[in-house]
Image (tube, rainbow, N blue to C red; front, side, top):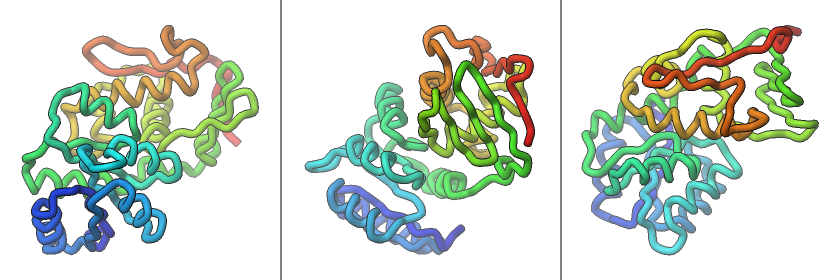
Length: 236
């Protein structure tokens, strides 16, 4: 994991140099981009393992860059920004970011989050073919595909992992902290806004009426519960 290739996208040269040195000392391979346009070109050509992305970029801003990246690949994106308001985090997550840290940040926390986002947790290696059918929506966990009325629906890796864990614990309320630690990693637990954003995405993709969900139910102040209708789950 420490050999992973990290792309730092930031227009602050001093910050890029500091991050290059800090990450390089920990064994990461580091590349840099000073704009969104340069970042997209490097991403297409070099395929980094993770992207550290600032929001305040000249030209193509960080949120636009994030959406462009997410439209074509699942590379983990960690946003680093001086903006620390909840609405800024939610906007970044809605644009496709996996994680968000406010500058200035603790370097060791950043390293822990890089490793968490690079990790492919064995929880999600499903051997059996489990298929769920919900009101014309078919979810195949082995193939990691979702179809709604015979049209493919794109779920990100984290959306799929969140959905899988909720389904695996259908009928039970899964606490916020547990969901965050299973899907994002053991260093998480207080980022409830992450869950609100990703659950909202899932509801829009699988619920007949996202504003009145039938399957992904909110347990106020506690967590989320997946209601699995009788006969909806089959194993092949």
